[in-house]
Image (spheres, rainbow, N blue to C red):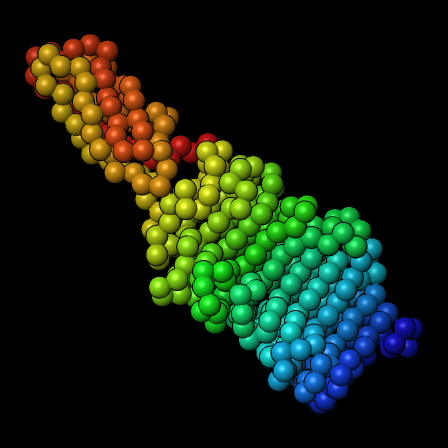
Length: 360
């Protein structure tokens, strides 16, 4: 279709059986077409639906059945020029294809309540300006990430993904061939920006739950849970560059199998790593410096990163400690040394210590 005659077209309760190289629906130039409760069966290398230059096509309660792991189920190769104006995909099932959902350069994307699993490449978005991905079950047959967010130079600006919200999804995987499967991959020669992962469950990854290559851009990872496949897994989160990550915020997550700053490959300028269960970045206790002395060294118990003096707070617990004036003279990956400006007098000085990764 290519004229307004086919605007607001409704296709419902149909069954499509596609052969080699054939699309069930080939949709170009329509506005608000609705495809509801349709079944797309691929027994060879056929494809489900192709969109181009469409305004907000709506797919609802459709089933895409692939049997040979070939073809594409939903394909929208947009250019980001404004005529590729969105896609809404809800309450649908896409399984058994080479590529499940592949979207490039749409002005808007909404995917909710879908099962997209057991595909060679389940869900890829590139050069996408705005997306809401929520309440889905997303998996992968092999080692390709269940969700791939990337760059595509064929789309007009932005050619990278921007303003993407991923919330309340369950990511899974079925690969057991080694430590190479990531639930989510973010990469591209130009970095994605303004990406948010909120309240998702990352499960059964064999390498990383979330693997990112981003440079000086914004990424928020909050309130998620991470649990790797048993006997596999490297880290729940991984920053490939290990630098230029000042725009990352990793907060309030649950790292079931544990995590460290070094294991996540985060640099010292990534300050907003806070309050994550399973990532020990805090320690506290008390040291005693006797009368006439002026120093004490103790093991601080922080693992996975080396604290700095800025990370240490030393509240005195008695008058001798306050008068002695404690300060951090040295700290490394294992030990912290507290000195005092004045020798401790009268009675032993009690000095509390609180160590927490510096918050900008």
